[in-house]
Length: 97
Image (cartoon, rainbow, N blue to C red; front, top):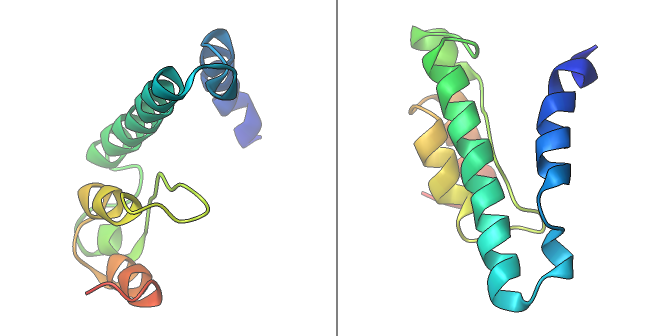
């Protein structure tokens, strides 16, 4: 069911150059652009209340993560989430204070 909602996003990304088909500098720029787009979209949805509001919002964690871990994952997680149990648990899991 959720796949139908993601199809337009997949189509937009598919219309862009393949990240791994570019030279290193262009590949990194394309990868960063895609991560920023995902973070922006999640931030807008959070602002609309999709992930809850008030105390309830602090119990839901949203991420635009790079796997294997990337040093910017923590910064993105902090930008996308308010202080609360979900973010605190994720930071503790990764050993970040």
